[in-house]
Length: 211
Ligand SMILES: N[C@@H](CCC(=O)N[C@@H](CS)C(=O)NCC(=O)O)C(=O)O
Image (cartoon, rainbow, N blue to C red):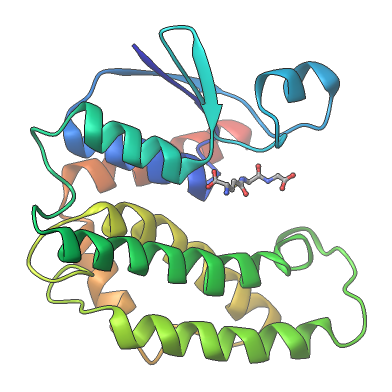
């Protein structure tokens, strides 16, 4: 049994959950938040969520989980057969996470919890976001999925990262950095997929339970 330790509020947890549900894999979800406590670090070296347990082996990093799930459960394929097409899907995920999500994440504590920001950080992040979103826009196809006609792992990542990135940039800069891309239309289209609808419903239920 695949055990997913994570949070309904964590986009990286939801990336893995969306992949599991899309593939129709049975899994157990254990609600956990990140921690730098020693007992948590003994289970997950980064202290972040999500982390995973399969047959007694623990590991972390959402992309490692996606690659494991794709290799272990190839029947519902979320990577194309062609090796170069597979590389293009991975390129999409890496650009989105490395050049956009991680950049916007620097302002997450400020946007969501009002944490202070050092001088110049907003300007620096804005410059990096410009470059990252433009790079992503050059490779994303939105036709209708990110890599083209096939729903792939890139969609499992983007569908959960886009709303968070838009929320952060809206809050901090008063504008959505994805406004120039067809992200809103794409997300509406994605909501027709039962797996994505479930991830959103679980998040809404967790929000309601938190009050
Ligand atoms: N590269 C990691 C990123 C995981 C991550 O950043 N998780 C966030 C929650 S969405 C977290 O645990 N943050 C707490 C921290 O950075 O200490 C992955 O892909 O799993």
